[in-house]
Structure formats: C-alpha cells, structure tokens
Image (cartoon, rainbow, N blue to C red; front, side, top):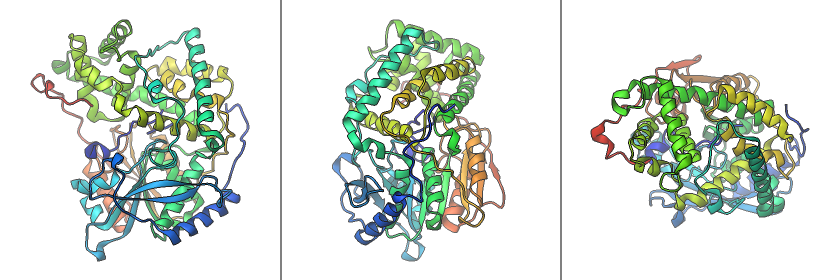
Length: 529
C-alpha cells in the first residue's frame, strides 16, 4: 500500500509502498550490466553540466527562498546517449557561515510516486535549523513524478471517482469487477507510456540519484530517505558504495529480494491491523470526548455502523465506505490525525457529516497529482520484481490474511492487482547488502509499531548493511520519525548528520506523547486533514 504523502517534517511544512512468486524474473539489469556503465557516463556528463538554479516553476508554489533547476538523465541507462528526460530539483542554500557548510543533503520521501520539491522549506522549522546551517537542503521530483517527465495511466477524474465500496468480504462478482479494472489499468499504463513504461523502476531511480549527486558537485552523497526512500537508498548503497558519505534510512522497507513487493504487502496489511487496534484503543480511552465506545470492539462497531450508513447514503454524495476506509487508513500512518478522524466519526454518527466530508472526500484540485503519484507507484512496483500472475494465488493468500487482518487487506489487493497483468518485463530485485568496511556508518530510524513499513524491515536492513546502527522509537507507530516530535530521535539524527556520530550499538527512544483528544469546545475549530 502506498504511503500517504506526509512525513515527520512534512506534517509541519504542509508514499508505501509495500507490497509464491508465480513467474520467473525477466528483463533484469544488474550493476554489472550496460546500465552500470551508462550510469557512470551520465554522471560524468552531469558533473560537467551542473545545475543552473533559478526561480522555481510557479505551479510548485514554492517561496522565493527556494530555487530550482533540472538535471538530465537517460531514460534507458543501457543507452545513455539515447533519449534523456529532465528531473526537477529544488534547493535552499545552507544558512550558516561558509566554514559550517557540509554539502548537499538530498531527501526522498518515499512512495514510490512522491516528490520532495518542498523539502527545502524545512529550513524554516526549528527542528531543522541546525541542519539547514550545515547543508543545502535538496529536494527533487523523481522520474515520472510531477514536472519530471510525468507518467499517467488514466484520466484523473476517473481515478478519483467517488463514492466507492469497500467490502470486508468481497463477493465473487465484486472480485471479477476488480480484476477487470486492474487489467484495464495496466493496459492504460501501457497505452499512455508506450515503450518507456519499463524504465520506471527502483534501479533506475537509484541511478538517477547517482546522476543527481554528480550534478550537485558532490563527491559523495549525503542522503535521507523515508519509507520507500529507504529501499532506494539501500539500492544506491549497494550499487555505489564508494560514493556514500552519510545515509539515514527512516522507516525502513524490508529489502529482501523475495519480499519485493508482493510479500511485503502481505506483511503491511497484517501490521495495519495492529495499528488500527492502537487507534481504536486510544479512542476508547477518550470515550468521554468522542462517545464511540469504551473498548476497541465498541469503536469498531461504531466505524462499521458508519460504513453501512455510507453504503446506503454517501456523505456529501462522494464519501462512501471506500473513502471512509482510506481516511482512517491514514490514521494508521500518523497518530496526529487521530483526534480529527475520531471527531469526524463521532460527528457523523451524531448527524453531522461535515467533518467527515471535509476529511475524506476526494479533492478535485488534487486529482491530477493523485493520479500521477499512483501511476508512478504502480509502474515502479510492477517493474521491480515478479508478481503472481494467477489470481488464485492472490485470492488464496489474501482470503486467509483477511481473516486476521480485515482492515486493509482487500484495499491493498486492489491497489496492487495491476501488477498481476503488467505488460512490461519484470526486473530481478537486487540483493541489497554491504560487507564490513564497504560503507561508512549509516543510521536507521524506526518506530516499533509502524504499520506502513513494519519494524522487521529495519532489523533486516541493519543485518544486511554492515556498520549500520538502528535507533528505535519504542511503543510508537508514526510512519517517518526524523524531524518529528521526538527530541531523542532528532538528537541522534543531528549527531549523525552534523558530526558523523552514531550510537555504539542499537539505541532506543521513549515514544512521543500520544495526541490529546479534541474537546467538544474545540471541535468546531478543527481543520480538515
């Protein structure tokens, strides 16, 4: 399931992914192939050209303190002198004295399908001011995203059409409808992108990162990746270990080749069930505020009552069970949404659908961006690895899983099902790893109850990258912890990025405080989230 476009620092400024294998690997490109030499050639060319920074495109709505430019990368790294595409890059120059500057810090927020052109705005946040003195904060739109050779698979209006159902136990006829929709979506991607479709992949994203490093004039890369951005960083560290300066992996994807991406999706659905219970338990503790029940089961009953009512009469004409489920899924990512979602559910059941409509209805003005992000997500995940091509495999695995994890399982299936019918050749996932001495120390940050990237992924990444050190926010589940509300986590982040220091061994931080409930007096002033 693709992560929502939000992050520890993004929440203050303002995807995942995740996903036996029924087909053999095809079309694999490895670092020793022609694509590897193509990446070296493209990086040399980018180092000579640099990036001409200037005003940002008006459509990005960035302040004048942020400047933008472009870097050209090969569409196909096996043919570096063939067609090239432009990636848009943003930057806020380091604010400190020249002697303080340590270079560029590049950020990828995950997805795949999310961009970080907004990232330089973090320089204005208190938690980022020391880092902003030492580093140019650099964001970018990865290939296919936003202004960077944007990818589309269908009309945005069709993508955001609402209301939609969300049956916890889909009928056979409904499954057939979703199979047909997945097949049509895969055909739409092929029709819109043509032969270029196969080139939207994680391996090419990692090669693009190497070209960006060179274009920025950096001998070695300093990088912060969140969610899917950790997998991208892990690929880069495996492919270009001598070009790594410092790397932070925040909320790590399990990079095991046999888990990219189908099995990771199964694990994510299971983890979301646990986080959904965390949310309902919190709501029950604050029954005096929300009146949704005094235990998690009662809160679930209130949610299911709302879903049944929305199936009969969509709120605002656009919020059905599918939109309700998507809105509450976001609460599984970010606990700062808990008060807003609980208030919306409470008010809906009391007869006021307004808060729920404001939080859950699709926004027409965001349809194009949402469709683009989903198209990139789908293309990258489907291209990255083999997926089961027999619906019976999906049906068997997820029918069993839905018995223990009903909240997200089927929504996750429908999101990823186009990969069963994908028209482009699949790649062979890279075996991510670094032997002792191959990399400088790297830092892994993880919340113990993260649902989008289950904690086991951080443990596996630590095992695979020799010299990495894991910092855990115990008992917490917000997805993306760097630059968020936990001062202990941020202290480790600063010590590493500013001084190159990591803990001697694994370290733990106490959880950030759970959110305060929203009182009856404050409900009327609660913004839509």
